[in-house]
Length: 426
Image (cartoon, rainbow, N blue to C red; front, side, top):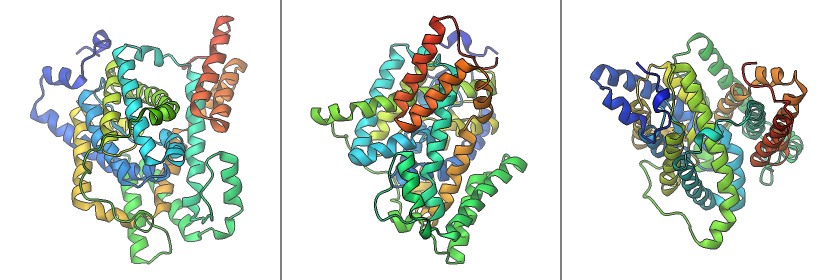
């Protein structure tokens, strides 16, 4: 069977390709199991990412349902799972602080249009050539930002004013309120992180994240633990999907939102194609980068109508999909259906989930996201180290877009002087 290289340039969804090859009941069974497995992972993670982004947890679930279904149905990868991603926490949280959720959904719609145009213009292959040191730099920076964003809920720390966004003001504010630290919340957060890591090591096919969150929630209810829960902060999660609403597209408002939309577009393109590339490596297949960008764009436009948060390719869930035996995009579509069933039938259970448990989940996500070995390897060469540290530092202290730009400019200078940055696998 061909690996898809010959058709990688096509603007044709992989779903059509896999169906044309022949799709029978045994393949559906494998996709069913994989979709259910991914949904079990996506449930707690989608809510955790939404909470960390400063919005209510159901908005992360809407992204998994609407965006996840469309990314699989229209995408250029057989195995890509779309939904909310930890990489977007910083950008979404900053947009929520500045513009509110209305600004986020407008930026998503604009970003979705940009992503679609990138794919239709066949520029996906260019995005894939972002230097490896830049990718590692911004990935490690995002991991650190995610970790710092969870310290408040992880420790149950109470602040008298909104939590600052920038890293050092955030750490100073949290440090000055350490006297409000809740040992019980810390214990739950640590327990969740430990359980997830133990299950992943010894029982990798088990849904470690859901098990950990369920145990923490059960302990919180049965023992009446003094910790803040989803229900205490956000109330009950609505059952079912909201009615679609067109985001605010007034011209003056759109102009203000454009820089945020551009940041969403850049990160969404890079993160999605990186995730698809990882799926290729695990499955010996070849994704269609331009079709993938079109699908990501359409998914973000559609999700914005339902008030969800940014949709992109999710590395951990995509890898879980491959490991669980998926054979086609049907598994990703089924994962979205399973999440929808949860929202309709059991959303009220989410109210009992401790916020420190979700913080424990994202702490593990941040640890796994950071490419620690690659960071150390790239530091051995001064050129790659310069690009790496520039990307990392500018992303931490300024923003993601400037961080990627700084790293790419430096890499281009080294390339122009015939002193190339170390590439992956050297």
